[in-house]
Length: 473
Image (cartoon, rainbow, N blue to C red; front, side, top):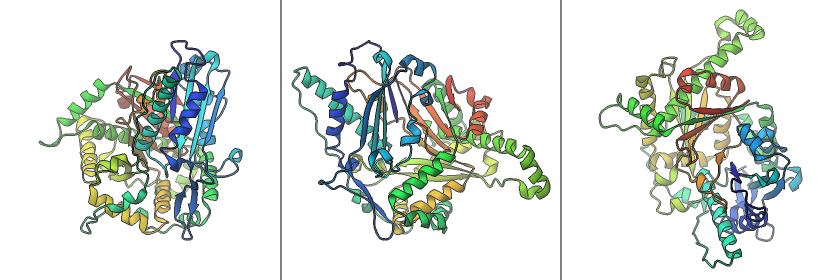
């Protein structure tokens, strides 16, 4: 995640996010999050786990450096990370061993870059998803910022008490679901987990370090682009009301239902057009002429995976204090007749939003318990699902983080100018983020193939919702 801070007040080096304070606060925050100093281990059947060895802590990578680029230049580029002197995504996008840290997987990578003339700062933070999810990540970042502010006040002889919190990190909270054997999982989810996979078996057999190297190698050959779109709160609210007008009486669609429906449509149609472009090229066209219809890609439907925070859906009073990974994806397969070039009208969007609403609402404690039982029954199951998803071209993984306090991360110099994800290691992912409080609204981030990105920008229906965008091809 990238947190951008502009020094609009022209504060001095020792007052604008001072390096010593930020570093001291970071290591103090680890006391509240001890798993960040853990080692990744694997037992005899390939199941991975985290181990904290107090005599041999696996400390995260932390660096604070300056560069010759002025903050105004990065702002004018649309905050394009490729303008930086270091490739953050290539170095830290996948939890794989790095030569600079002795070949061991690190749980967290922190890279602070200070721009020319003290014009601004980028705080880049990456923490392994096996350790923490977006909910826990924003809590970590806000705790780090809170300690930084407290240290600065203490330095200025302002005596205040640092608030303390009781965070939970014990994964046994996952094992306390109430299982109801009458709750049935959907067929698609069962198929993704039960399908045998030699690749999944191979990845579960090798060491965590080798697994990380393999994932890194795969990610480096997959090209993708980042598109960032801002949608005003008024535009989104107006669209929700228009779509709501076609919903059955008594059903209230949320902003999340409607915005996930919108991005599902735009990505599905962009992928279809990009596929048509590919088949029109000379070599694919020649293959199609030989194979006939057998050469055409089969489109049985489109898969949207909606990330759901389990904390509010299980009967665990301490769930909201749990800082580990407690999110899972609800798979929704839309038939072809629901997504076509007419799907952008309000009535069609309502049909998609209703399906999303129903699936998300049906994700209760019993469903989560059944899924957790299934996934943990075999150590290969997580990898089976991962590689099953990887083979599906017509898919989109979505995560709505609008309610996460990303813009509360104030290290003492004010809230961030902008918060964005760094380019993800793998494509077909969309994030719905809160926009800056200064502008309001929503920011939608796409990590997709370059040809798909071009078709998203070329969608007139989608761009009518957008008031500004950055495209990093």
